[in-house]
Image 1 (cartoon, rainbow, N blue to C red):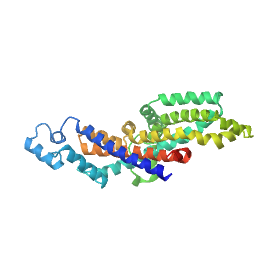
Image 2 (image 1 turned 60 degrees about the vertical axis):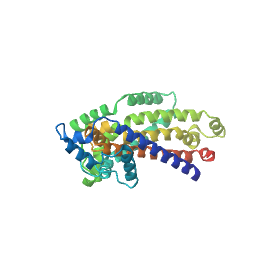
Image 3 (image 1 turned 180 degrees about the vertical axis):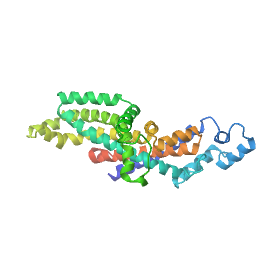
Image 4 (image 1 turned 135 degrees about the vertical axis):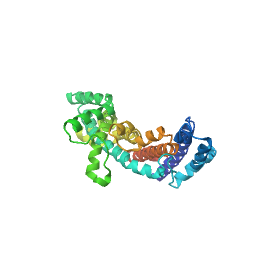
Length: 315
């Protein structure tokens, strides 16, 4: 297990290095000069040059890349061009919204999908299975931003159970802050739960058709006993992959939901920074999101090894 983890850690480090190069190049080739954008069209050339020097934009791209990466290694992401605030502080503040939102949505998605997937597989071909399949098709087809808007109209405008948007901050109280994330988390979770339900059902049905399952039944186990004791664990391997991918999507792709519910998360920060040509913020936030995605994939790989010992033997 240790050799397997070390091998995956090396792969993680290489992936981060490659991602940092790609992100830096992608941001650098975007047309426009941040200093000129900040000062406006009528700015004098000497003023622009002075601001470029102040922002560290007058050195070569290689020097900027090395400085940026070395700063991140030390926990220093630089200072925002627009807000004149340390980027690390901005990421920390916005991450307190995006990360709990992603975890909350993933928890809802998993709590809904795994039981429904097991029920659908255990009652294959029945009315329950058909009904769940229809519901999951509808869940996949519904855009999460449309679902979010509909929930705002129903639960905020009509019933007034939840606020229509905004985030009071965790300092206002845990339950009050969590309540403000309920609707956006559900809007993010429903399509993901529909996908995960179908994956769980399909994986479980494939496992139920294996020879070892017929052997378990032949030894006297009931269908439900064989399903929970033998099939469920083996069926979890592809499900773990989807859960890892979903968390990556939820933490990095919640920008539309953050716009709908006016949440001050990382997605909105990236959008605002792109509009303001605040390159150091864009680079750093995207790099943090990539790091989160790679770490999640690393955790999924370790979960694979825990669920399927054959992976550990191959290393």
